[in-house]
Length: 388
Image (cartoon, rainbow, N blue to C red; front, side):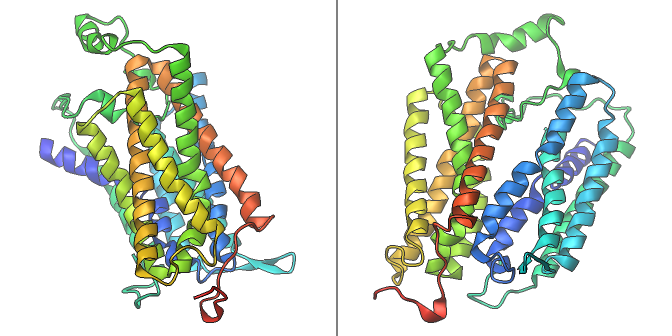
């Protein structure tokens, strides 16, 4: 029975961020079909930030009406919205409407908002194809596949609720709490409040108290890192990934998008077992990640003629740069969450606020630069004006 519960929990977890991450992986195909073209990622970053309305409402419900939020009902609704959104994307993702005399992907944007609303909210509720080769399946089939994964998540949740509760759920810490809580969600779970309830709670908290306290300057540094890292990874760089990768071809863009999606969970997994709380080490990693991000931004600014555009070296460098950028800063985000969780729960709440503020600032900053001031230029592969 315990094995079944764990398998169902894993299947249930598929519903968190699988759809939006799938969108980013599929972008190398989508940007060539929708009228926004290379500007599409900058729209998506803003839409995803607007979708944080979901976790905000959940948090307010926990704060203002503690114990009254029926989370299992909310999860049913959220997963159902996710399934419907994926199905609608499969059917209407390429439909456009005329606004101001120009075609816009309104259907794609509206459905993506609800899909992002699902993924943003699930993070609070439960703590490969391009044109360089013919795709193995269409974009429509890809969205149907995402809908299937959401259905599996919903079915697993239904099964978890139907299982008999005559057995005790395992409470063994397979991974340290500090690693698990590193997502910096900041959601207050009123049911997990155990302050002053027995000697076991005191024993559990004693390792946390052994960690040294940080000075005000160190805390300011930590929160500045949180704001900057989230601004870079969730707003600034994703908005221009097409401009930094597409001049090298669809293969480079596909590999950058796919491997970056792999680098994030891989870095988080490494952080679970290799934890370094040194602020100096965090600072060095942040500088390294910023360096890789600066290279990516520079190549985007040089579009349509970035460095080594016509050489294999250029493709290798841009893919490795995106991989290292995502990997190093993902590790930093996890370890910052670990450090702040060790300090206090309120510190982790502020970590979540700083992360959201950074993501919002990054997205809002890049949107006008890309779509209003046109600081980044697209390229035409058939009529390249770059010097050889």
